[in-house]
Length: 508
Image (tube, rainbow, N blue to C red):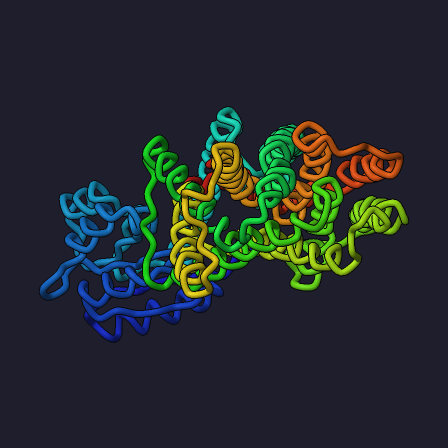
């Protein structure tokens, strides 16, 4: 049986010898390339693909001994077998060639049968060695994967064991079993991490609701004095700047933005800070805090619709039902005649919709793919920008509120709004980064619930049956609308952010 076809390099400075050897090797069914001297032989060997070298010893410049020495000192060439064919017949020369790494030796007056036997033996040894090296490399990959699995920092898709698992031998069986176990462990790890992320996100929603929920009640409280909303917004933003500055001192994080970030920060400051602050104060004078808190729940509806249209979130029936329940809770409190008939104009209720629209825009802006600057640095930056816009606006429009017109209780309420805004925005940024804009928008429900409680405690507003029904809708919607980590791909992104991933290059 003839050996599989291989590529043989014939190195000889004498053309008749090259022709004779080429003919003999081709008759054995192999492909042939030739080199006229040692230098050209080494150049060809460096390109790879050679299975056997038939090497002459006596050549000008670089002789066969030097070629042998160079090959055996090179890790990429040392496994290529060399069959020395030379006119030298002295025993010392033969011993030297074998000592330098040659597989065997033939004279140029070789017997074709002997040449065939020697060539096939060399090629078979190389094939066996190649398989051995491949096997050892696969064993090393499996060992590396085991070490990665032991550290629990892995993704079965990136362990690089697919080729090993394809082996029809015990090592392949072991790799397949290993991959199955790794996949089970990885999926269990993802499940636990998703549950932890969901729990952390839910806690963040509750905290944000407690802080943001103060805003409607406190805004109505300060507007009962008949002060201008733009002027009060300046004071709130000034106090927010001071609070966020202290926050940066405590956390050790400061804004280090580049000029290219300015447009993004300007839009975020206007839509997420200045405009909703003025709008909230403006409508708080005319809409009860409890009703205003419930209107905020529309934020979740707006975020989901926009995010789904932009492809930022994957819509599904469960999420849609949850968000519709949120919309239902709003309808429960806005539509009834007792809400509108209590002196509240429908026009002001619709004007209040500007607040959740602004909050929804803020959620989506925070979810946009941007460099992840420290959250407190972002809060400080947008607070400063808000002051720089609001203060000139108040001075030009004559709506600035001097400190002499602020009572102690009003100033305290403004300070509480500023603290709630800074802390709530800080938590909001973290939640958007970890759970996505749609999940973060569910803070609207907790704001509504907290706002109802604050309205009762601070303003002594009355709780009606409609509020109870709305609360039931909110809780149901919050349960149905889950984080974007329901998708395994998104969960892998979260793991990468937590630095529990590894690069596949580690296996090389």
